[in-house]
Image 1: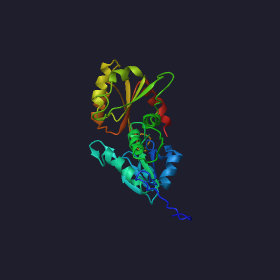
Image 2: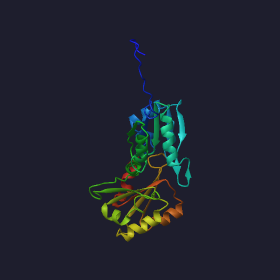
Image 3: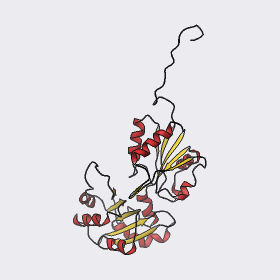
Image 4: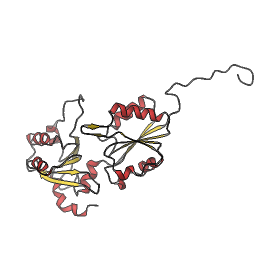
Length: 266
């Protein structure tokens, strides 16, 4: 009742109406902690919970608030610590009892990072969510290897494509023929395991077998590795050197600049 003796009805909040925290989808960048955004770093320093991916570097993980709960949700080929649906459910759950929940992703959340999928699910569950972009490895790793993805003398266009596709997706496979004709520089994410097929498809689409290709592993980190070849030689080179994922592939004449510009690498 109020002061006048009138009966007052207090509405009961539903689960989605109750106060919840906020989820931040933060891009950690490609590995070098110096490339992480100030906003992303600030969120890590004050987060209550951080759910991070496999490709986030140890140096960046070390900047997380020591009192924060840290959960590994990393996905590597054949080794998934959590299913995607479990990760989303965990984000929703943690947001019910924590003010700041950070979903920390390597590179940029919206560039082959499943950030869009997670954001959709969080919005549907009534959880406030914000994306904090990060530098994507498809640009940064080539830059650290002395390979600009565009250059007025070599390439006026670049396309980014995944070499590892989800099952049951909107179409059965990447149209490599269209990719080969669409840009002068092709950057392939997660393509090492499928490299033999990618090379065959691009050659069949008309790319010369002498087209330069660079594989860049652990881009921007102190242990960054590069393997330089051509469409004709790269598969054999991978086998001979036991070059492994995770790596970015850069295909096109811009790779020729590696021998000149890599001397100024960070």
